Image 1 (cartoon, one colour):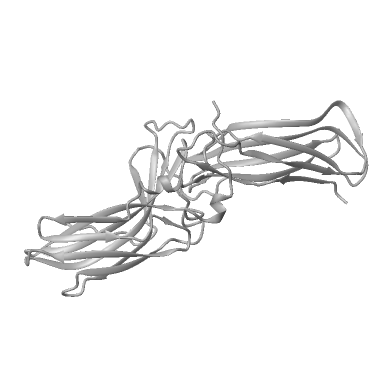
Image 2 (tube, rainbow, N blue to C red; image 1 turned 135 degrees about the horizontal axis):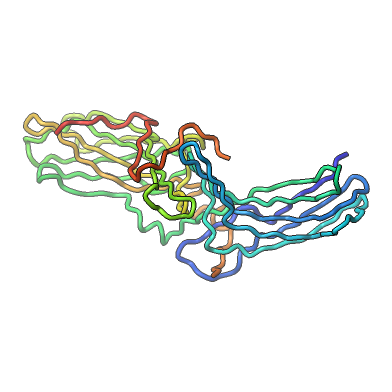
Length: 336
């Protein structure tokens, strides 16, 4: 029987609350349990908590440890004989509030993990185990008011239009309606069709967290849809779906190294004196793990204030302009 080494945590997921300072400390707290199956000589036992960035630039991959804390539970210059019984080591760590949130993008990751090692004398195999830890941003009600779910405007005194969505937050697999209202004010203006698309934009900065000249961004369409406008109709309905697979969509996140954003684009196409015109609108939306107010996002304490990747075609970072990657049918281009 192999010796057992386990990391047991009170909780492995923590939520940062935006615009809040102080408050009760959130602790990374748990136990390291070592249970040798027979007597074994041990040189040292330690546990490390690390925050790591992995980022791809062209054919080069950068790996950086931006936070590390280590506990040493046993250390002997020689070695110490451990009997076949259970050894338990308690540990805790206040998590600094300035830690970047966990993030997964196509060509970058911000990850946290605990790694434990029991080192044995030469010619014996060391014993290791690890456990992932997650730090997320809790989108509070205060932050929610910054997101519009309704656009109302007039275009060239020819058409009054509105774009309405039920919420700014969605989880993978969600489908949501997009309502477009269009009222003709000038008989020369004829309605043609409406279009909507859900877009994901990922911004990659330098590994030191600065934007610099070699920052890059990638855009891709997650879902697009269109429909003709019925004659005499003053309202159209479209439905968009957030991809369910983590391979096709990433959660909104903002770190010094990588930022993932989502937006809803809409277009009302009209014909004026035989010429095609487009009325475009944009609403920012969030792809989140849990919607605001859900029980799971409320159970975690705020963090206190304190002073690799599977790659297909990583961005080259040669320009700060966004690169568009076709993921769904993109809107057609028109000559105006």
